[in-house]
Amino acid sequence: MNPTAREPSPSSSRVLTVPNGISASRIALIPVFVALILDHDTTTAGLVLFAIVVATDWVDGMIARRTGQVSDLGKVLDPVADRLAIAAGLIALVVRGVFPLWAAALILVRDLSVLLVGAFALLRHDVRVEVRWIGKLATFSLMAAIPMVSWGSLGLPLAAAATVGGWAAYAVGIVEYYVAALAYLGDIRLASYRGARPVDVDPAG
Image 1: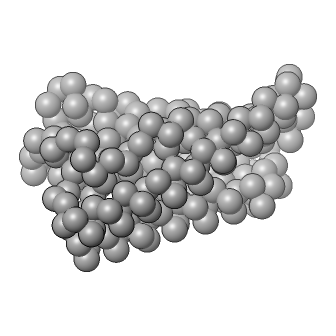
Image 2 (image 1 turned 60 degrees about the horizontal axis):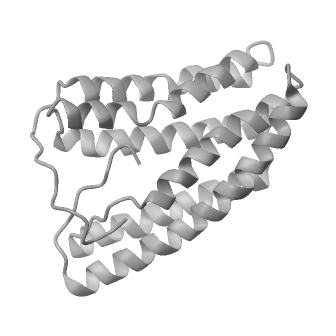
Image 3 (image 1 turned 180 degrees about the horizontal axis):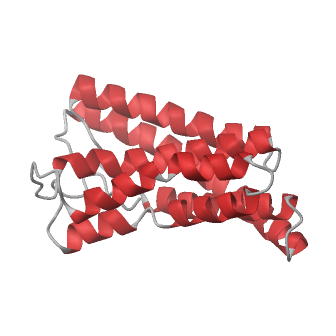
């Protein structure tokens, strides 16, 4: 996030756009991969579908920007799809017993804290700040770590390599995640103090 980065990208009030359709489809797939993960016979398929959904979190935002289809709805729908998919997947994997509760809690507590503070800043001070590069990097690391650790826990092919790689990615990603959170909170505080105008949140972050 960077309150001095750039002015908001032009957006429209359109609802029926390709990016919004992609975001809606990703949300619609959440109960599907949750059900698959929780069923012991289809956990692997659910894990693969979860990985695909979270790995494509940049697609709708990228298409929106490159095709001029940025919309007010999309600016909300895209990050909502991302956070819902991550939270639902983590909870399902913890319930299924293939991802540790403590590791999931560190991610979910951070996300909830930033979400609440960000929502307060937006509603109270009309401040919206932009995603920082370290936040993007942290998200990428964690979105790789979660499926890899779970893959290893299921004892699937290359389980040992997946476990080692997954925990390495998690260790790096969770540190970056909290460093980014502190930076976001600082940006929000500074922007609120200065009375900054809202800036666009990059949907791909």
